[in-house]
Image (cartoon, rainbow, N blue to C red):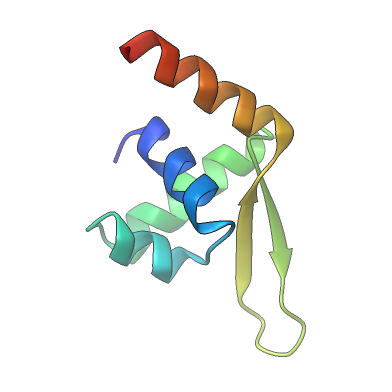
Length: 76
């Protein structure tokens, strides 16, 4: 799972939880949750908790959108 793939998935989905990311990127829950946590620490994604379910949701920050644009321009 590459950083650009994860950022692009969140940009397209408008936000997701780790299970959705794992399913969408054909990965394990553990790998997806750890990757999301790393991106959170880099301020590329924001993490929010649903108070009703206790599930964390992730969405792209402005910094994450800028990094995605940069990564996509590098591969073009």
